[in-house]
Each structure stands twice: as structure tokens, then as C-alpha cells.
Length: 420
Image (tube, rainbow, N blue to C red; front, side, top):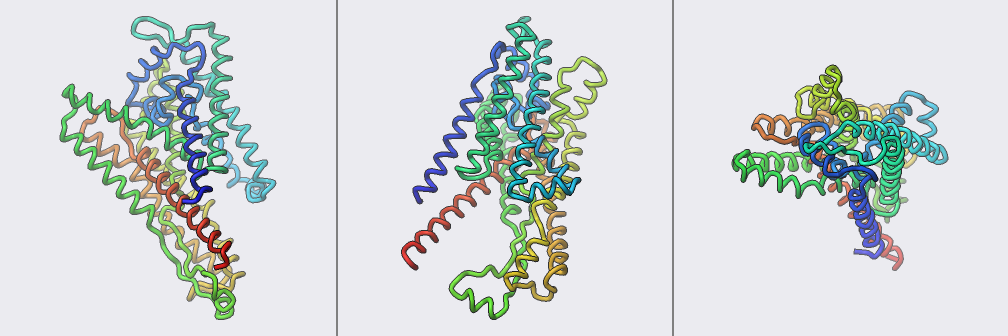
């Protein structure tokens, strides 16, 4: 393993360690015991799901309680706007324009974070523990100002950490932050399951069945994520002669799941936002909406299925540009056998990608909902969904691929340096 790769891995681990340290820095003026007591009693609803994605930072009401979700929400808004308005979409494709585009996302993240932090701060005002203690130990107005600034600082730090990991480390920084949050909650989840078995609230056979579901889900994710359609490509004799000492790609790999883990993250962010904000409301209509969007309800998972399918098609249409592939292929003197170069090639590739995306979207939606249905049918008293497993496995596969790619790059650079 090269020194450069080792440094990138160490940088990534260092920033993830910093992220986990921030999860233990509480917002000033909060009674953490009261907040933890509240989240323990809401472990199987939207708040429990939010807490899981944050790596239990929410139940500690740390400065990163809002996590990276405001940034993801801002990214969703900008992606939808870029697809709707051509000028914004053109800005995103240009180098200078991309910097402005990312700047807009950052400003939008600040606005969303402030709105959410103020909402959380005001909601804590009515929160009391079983012994009658208040969740807030200082003046309300002061607390709103302090907590808003603290949570904004925490979210911006997370955004910065994610960008640093992407630029200087290995893998996608935002995905790795979510990955680290979920993985950090695994020990407490295992401990909670053992307590349920010891207390007689869960049968040991049920635990075995859950493990089987998890292993089957992981196996299905790995199988599909490694699957791809290889479209054959031929090159003219002249091109082959010119590149006889170089490796020329003789196929176009198109993944079954073109959109990756993004659809599941986007769908979770959208569905958790109203459910989290409305949780604990005293208004009967708002309480009905909160129950309607509870992660342990069938309606939540129906919406999850539909949203994942929608975002899978939407994101695949953004990431896979058949016209660019067709133009590059034509410039390189390559062609798909039986298909005319140019527009016909782009149309053919779009057709292939569309069929793969259909099955990829159904796979993502099924992984996001079916494990929960199976676990709920067994009467398990806590929330378990395939989204967490999907994120963990996909991010792990993506990171391993990038480590392998970095190793191959270093190997080729070494061979070139010695003149081979």
C-alpha cells in the first residue's frame, strides 16, 4: 500500500473521529438527562430514526444534532431546481458555475439549519422529565439564540468535514458521515437486543430470524451493486493500431443501480423532516399527521417506496448522460456494433439505462421497505429498516472501490516512472 493512500485513509479516519467527538459536545443550557429520557421513550418513531442516522447525537442534543440532513435537503432542492431551470443546470456543468452552485447550496443549508434549530429549541421549552425537570436550564430567549448558533456551527462543521474527506481522503465525505453515524449506533442496538432477550420481551428465535434478514439484505445489496450491463464497443483498425500499447475499453459498463444510495437518503430526509417537526405537538390534527408519517407505520413505508422509485429515476437521469458518452465514443473512433454513431447510440444507451433503472429503482425501494415489513410481522418492538443497511453496505463497497482504484493508479504511476 502506497504512502499516499495510507495518508488519505488516515485523513479520512481522523475526520470521522472528529465527527464522533462533536457528537458528545452538548448545546449549552440543556438538561441532557431529560432529553435522553424523551428519546428513549420515542425510539420506535421518527425521532428514533433521526437519532440513529445521527449516531445518537440527537439524544445528547449535541451541536451536531441536526446532522448533515440540512445539507442533504438543500442539495435536493438545488437538484430539483437545476432539473427544472436550464440556466441553473448549465451553471452546474461549468467549472466556475459549479463553485457558485455549491455556494448557493451552502447558503440554503444555513437557512434550513436556522429554521430547524429554532424549531427544536422552541419544542424543548415544553419538554419535562418524569421527575418534573425542565429540558432547558436557562432563559428561553437566550437558549434559542445560543442553541441556534451552536447547531448552525455544528452543521457547518459537518459540511466542512464532508468536503475535506471528499477532497483529501477516500470516498464521499457526506456518505461516510452518515455511515459513521449508523455504525456507531450498532453496539447500543446489540446491547438493547440482548436486554430484550434477557427480559423475555423477545424470543431468541426472533433474533436468529432478524440476523437471517440482515444477512439476506446484505447479500442482495452486494449482488445487485456489483451487477452491471456491459455494452460492447468496437474501434476502427486505425484506432487500435494507434493504441496498441495502451488498453482500450471494449465495453461501456452500465450499473443496474445507477443512482447509488442517494434516493434512499433523499427519501428519508424528506419523510423524516415533517415527522420530526410535528412530533410531540399537542394539536390533534398535527398529531394525526405525525402518526401518519411514523416510520413504524405502513403509510410511511408506502411513501418511502414511492419516493425511492422517483428519486432513483430522477438521479439516474442526472448522473447518466448518454449524449456525452456517445459524443466521446464518436471522437475516439468507437461504435456499438449494429448501432449508428451519434444520436442513435445515445438513444440506444438511454434505452438500456432506462430498463436497468426500472429494476434498480424497484430493488432500492424493496430494500428500503421489505426488511421492515418482515421484522414488523415478527412483532419486534423496535424500528428496523433496510435503509440503514443499504447505506452501510453501499458506502463500504464504494469506499473499497475507491481504495482499489487508488492502488491501481499508484501502481501505473510507479510503472511509468521506471519506464515500463
